[in-house]
Image (cartoon, rainbow, N blue to C red; front, side, top):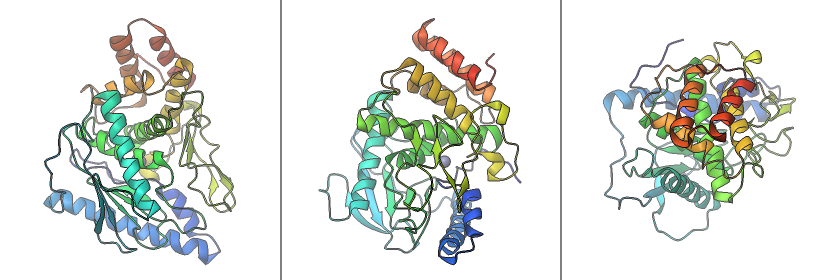
Length: 355
Ligand SMILES: [Zn+2]
């Protein structure tokens, strides 16, 4: 197990490897086959990511976009694995016949809009970075990922997973990895890795809530709702409201997320449990946001964003470091008000100390 260096962007797949590992061992080849194939593709793409990081090849050429306007391109891989594939919808193009293309385009747009209108951030890098997505990647591909440069979506195998463009929070989750990469750049291992994952869930959820105009009380606080096929016993990939309850299925197993430090999972798998222990900071955000009420992106989201982009968050931050900075950010932005109390109490309830 190696620790990520400072220069290696996160290669995040929305479905973590431990879930696919379990599926790959299923007795039914209809279920195991796509999972095995997906794991192989993920391993290959992860390697490619390392190579291109070193060589600097395959970078998306920056285009001269008007500041404060999105610059989206959606590509179709045509069930192959070449990236980015054929460009099928560029910025300003009318919607076409392919609902998957249209959903990817809309999801990129919603993410751009939340970042700009709520936080004054011009795209992922704060400097108008073009947003690039590829859909229909491979066959029966059970994942979606951010490779450091662009988003990639599979169609799912239809047995366990459906089209990965269906949940807008999955699109937001992956793009938020890009924001983290360009700001705090949290190491993708152990607690800092779980914070990296949690930040992506937080902003993924906020993008969904923003696009639906929901308050914290109205939101479902699920990540990946609508992604699981009907045969699966479950509602989503993760729950920020009740970590550990998103699914409990014969084939998929049970959602392993803890909600508090009492149930913190020590594991070498999944980069030290980055998609598992993220349940703890996820739940802290949920508690802070629902205590405050109203639109979660306005206060709780602003505090989390301030920590992510404020320059004080170390790459190897622990939960307690992040929590302490949220308390500091709450005070800096909102003074000694209810925000400070809500954030402090939220961390207390999940068992993370603030200093
Ligand atoms: Zn992720």
